[in-house]
Length: 247
Picture (cartoon, rainbow, N blue to C red):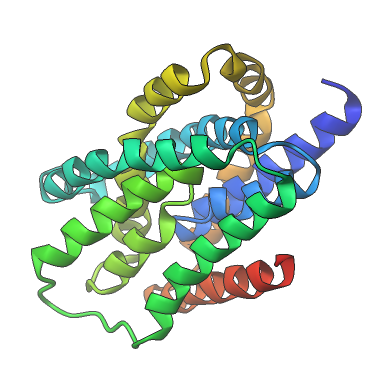
């Protein structure tokens, strides 16, 4: 890596860690467009983001682990594992396209997810039907496989619950953390030795991820439950606007 790559990748990973640690999502949604803008191709970018976000998730989930209900999440995670290989297959189909086309595809995916959010106001309630958990799980796996941008479905599902700040952030992070080993294994089969260089770059720059994670966790602790919901929805709106501009 040269100095430019260190600054570009390290800065993007640190920003993604801050955003995801404070809100529970957003690493890939923010970092992938940044790295694509800098000229990186899709597959190496996704690999860097998978490793970087995995480091962030492990650190944050350990910090928030006492607020997690793994038994509640498990059925939805299993459904997500069904969608994961479908997303990786879709990524392999578009990874060799011109970068402007790739950016458009990523932008369209984000906008579709946000259109579902805009269609109706999400209100927290005492009981959320399990069907919505299965739907969120499937599309989280699909979008994680496609470009490690599986945050919006599980965020919308989490917002429907009357959960505390820590449980909401921790659940969103833990939900997608389980996908990481399966995602890496499928990507290794799909892309082979192309994975090694991006993995090394992400590991070398892991201190930037840890720094961003620490900053983001401290920010998240200072946000009330109601303000966290507003923050999450504002991030989704920002992603939508930036996606339109990139098109």
